[in-house]
Length: 608
Image (cartoon, rainbow, N blue to C red; front, side):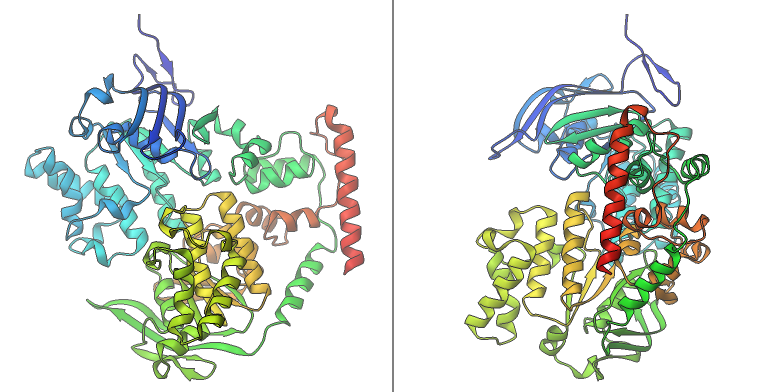
């Protein structure tokens, strides 16, 4: 008799699992170690499973085994069994598995090759030999679900990164596969389209009963899944309810997974069962008589004002700038702003709001149709590329669009050489830049053999080597795991503290809240908010109008009447209290932790 599997949330009983993986090991050609090690995983039909873990844990490799790309097209040492709907993938062709498993790759741009949006979405159904009316229906449904209906007729190459990612998802949806595998489906998406994708996954589960396997780093979204599977170094180290895994702070830290902000904050306050959501945090706050320090709001405001006094003179001035792309697509509409020397600015907004277009005007990559951009009072239209490069460095969203040399040192020294700097000084600047990002010892390596996070550091170093006054960074943390992300942001923070002006475009809202001194909010080619980050994030209704949801810690603290931007700030603002929910066995540990926290605060006050 066949064993039955119960989906813990939907309570659907299935006769057979739809995915069965047993004793799976895989090693890429020329690799020194297995990427997947003894993987055992069973997924029921209609189940929503999230796979998470640090970069190089084997998540994408595991996805490629589901549709037979491994072992048929991606060669290596393959051992074990992968069965899809009872079919052994080694005994099927990729074409046989094509209708059953749809995958959106992490490198989604590699999936796009057609000349029009509709042709891209039609490719899969056409290869299935479906009738033309059915193909049209599938195109319409896929574009509607992903919000791309208005982009019919557009060339994929003209779309933004987020729109390309949605198109890759739409082309996979048109296949209507039994299993939909999404490998980091929201990396290039703004908050609005992230919600669209997560709403879409819920719709597919409820209406189509599709099985979803999603690789995801966003811990707040992991809560919506039936199961969370945590990979590390090619092995499954945890598999269970998301609530249990997300409360295991030690495991998350070991696996470089970002903890939920409120879970981390209350755990450090000593809560035995820390909250996972804002509502749970509110209940715990009331139940344990927590309270903010009476001087918290004043101290935060004082700190913000003190920092603003350190800025220098105007470095970049944008006056009434408008710009349209070919075809009359309006990207900027009368944008004006002034950037001071030493600022750290985050630019937020949904895909297509004009963020990257504005950023490319700051260093002369684009010239305004109307209005002007001035760098230290000189219009960019009157400056050479070399002059602009000395003032404004630009780090592209995808480091592979910036890197072209076969050796890291050659890549980084290229900029100083092009500026006409003599060889000895150029080498000094290249070495300083590589030491700043921690890559001097690896300077002779090929940058294309590095991880995405390290390639991003090479791109940053190549800009730093020209020693610009300001650095524009377009999504510098895309594709990084939490450990790499923290390293990158620590580097960017150090650059700002050493005198570089930072202008950063990001869809990672908690990063803007925690690191940026000033936040610019864009919508439909216009600036709709511009001010100190704490002030902007205190107006959640304004953020929501731009389809942005504030981070957990901000949403919770706003209900307390004081906008707190990070877990670190939160802990400074909450005095220790007796916690009624604390585990009695941890009483001594809690006492020591609270005393340490009190001592740390006293030292900080003394230093101030």
